Image (cartoon, rainbow, N blue to C red):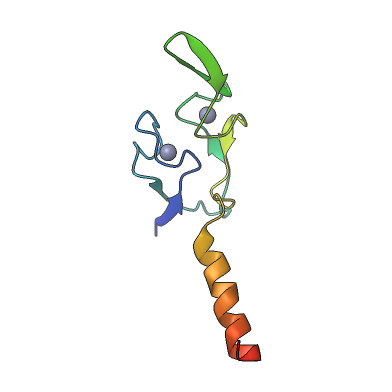
Length: 90
Ligand SMILES: [Zn+2]
Ligand SMILES: [Zn+2]
């Protein structure tokens, strides 16, 4: 079953992974969640925009995207805070 994963590009419309939607779908392989070659830079780690070469915004210069390590989401912090409140009544 495919999973929805947060894209590291934070919604760049030039992203070939999520097309600016911030979320892409990923289907875990039979070996689990495997890093795959970045479709935006094709593994070259950098992209050329208006003649300027910069680190790729999809893989953040890594060349591959690891679906098991999506960018940190602030909702996780909200969850921790709620648990704290339950335990300590704050
Ligand atoms: Zn993206
Ligand atoms: Zn890339």
